[in-house]
Image 1 (cartoon, helix red, strand yellow):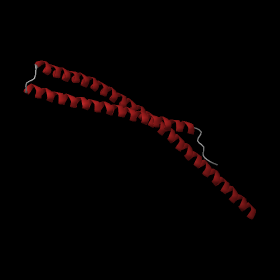
Image 2: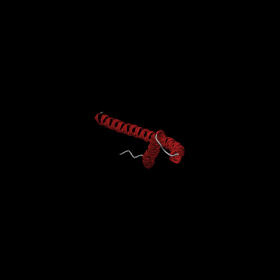
Image 3: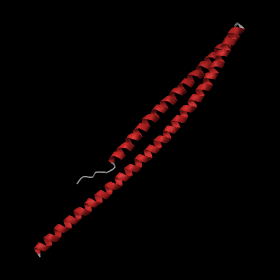
Image 4: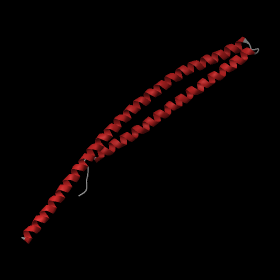
Length: 146
């Protein structure tokens, strides 16, 4: 007789839910990495613009050119502030998805342990039944020989 776990579909469902949660977490981490990269690019652009502004102020440049460059630096600063908020939101999503994954992993583990326990009980019952059959065969053989 073969072991069949009555709740195998639930075990499979929990494994699938965990796999989906892993994919979703991976996607959220990818989004967070994109935000970090974008923020890094903004910082680089700001540094480059500040360097150009300093170079322009050292040589002869009109006030309107310097003001325009400074306005662009201010614009980049505003973008950095927005990008930091986006990055913070992406981090919160990653944290939430990690929490969800941990819950899914716990559920899967609970169901797997229940399955393992059922398998141990089944195995013990089968061994007991087999031993009883062997004992009965030995008893019958003893009766025939006596």
